[in-house]
Image (cartoon, rainbow, N blue to C red):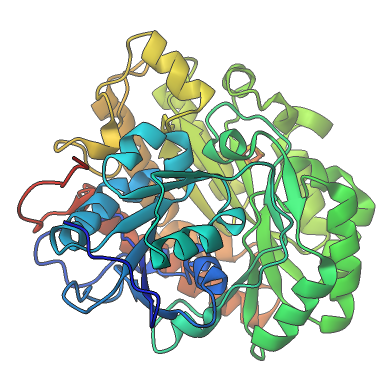
Length: 460
Ligand code: SF4
């Protein structure tokens, strides 16, 4: 039974779920402990006369018995199972739960089974209405955002006080991406569009929240999806003398003006989704543009000329991929001196063309891998064409171990771009050591909390 509505001092509890936890696990994956900006955006949308609390499931226990009138959880595919466990705890106590986020939009029927209200699309448009409806006892089952909202909301970071996050400041400029990579849940969610926050708001926020020498991470899905908008931001950043990092598509490597602006505005490095060195795989993922300008080696040389370090991400499991594809890629990442790199199997996120194709071909090993009792983090949830799921999983783990072995770290640290300032050399060593440490911790991590008892409570 759900508690009756109250309009006096209404209380909202915001929860950021973890991916999963082994029974008795003492230390959560450290590289995954960044400030959860979506939770701070939700907090900013809570009206001033509503009491708000925030618990980060990665860092602290959730006090389920603390009185509250509504629980808000943003759900991603990897955190869905844990989100449903948390929701079940609250709903058993009669507290209504509202869920939103990527997974809620891409899998609305599933998510709506585990909450009282579902929010699809971007929360800016709907969350104030949800809270108002709950306060006045007239909640609806579904709230759908229509067009993309103007990004005028600034995250409420007061909810992070006293929590031990990684020492990097997260700020948003742009949301979404114009490209249509077939595995990408982001572009499916935003329908290949991008919106931007007004630059003066970004500057105001930066000046207020940055600390001396602190790195700023623009969490944009692709900061250069709209190159003109990105250049405008970078020009405005120059006087701030920031050090920043972000995520960028490879096309920026061939725009000298953009590279110069990146350097002058304090860009220290970007994550680039190289994905594959194999042209057939790139074509299959609709990312043939990664071969523009002669290919990734040329792009990397251009980035290096401007002192920009690279976090390269690679994915494997497209039909053309073999074990040799993976070995060649690791050698490339090492030889090119990438600052850090990720080697992952492709993941069929719901709602993406990749997932639809594998499902139509009967190649998915689980109906919904993110909910399956047997599924563990890093397990390959589909049948690759040229190797077994286990072989692909093993190759990915081996690739990470090779890339983060001390021999490789020292060799990559010798590349001028990674050691040209004491600050970045220190960061290089610290970040690589942290990634090395986390390889085994992530491997085989259950989705959801292993010590959760009972069953997931579904809406009646
Ligand atoms: S470039 Fe990156 S963010 Fe954009 S669609 Fe491709 S994978 Fe997604």
